[in-house]
Length: 176
Image (cartoon, rainbow, N blue to C red; front, side, top):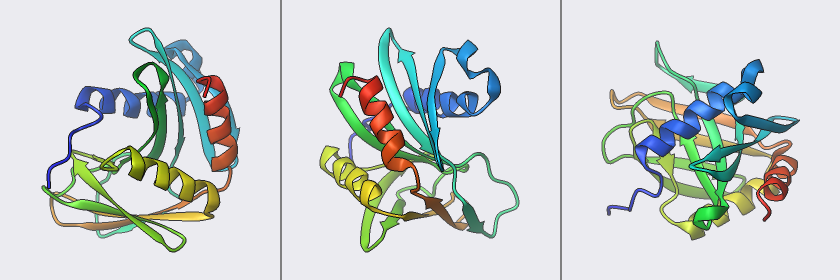
């Protein structure tokens, strides 16, 4: 089954770059405003094509897999109110995913399948995004499993401590 790409590669690269830049001290000079640090999650606001966008991001607490080199790994939830886009969940794996593979996200007793393209993974539709965010609000931890283009299986474990407060901060910043 093929899903429409809801986040273009250039937009995905912009968000990934924004996350990397925002985690460094001179973030304000790059047009990214850090809204706050909330335990294991960080909240940000930035301008994209003249419109306000907001996101929360976190890095895994633990990453497992038989790999020798891997790029930056993040979980991100983004709002783009000017495009009527809210709660877009994405993951940056730090490697290119295996073609036609899925990423499996488990939060407590719920499991979600996300489609992949390049180093990103996304929920297939708005309903899945909303369900993922609802689970993240209620959950304590999240496990993300993926497979690289070379066939390496990875398991990233995220804390959800602070997610709800970070999420509330971006809702306020983006006027939602």
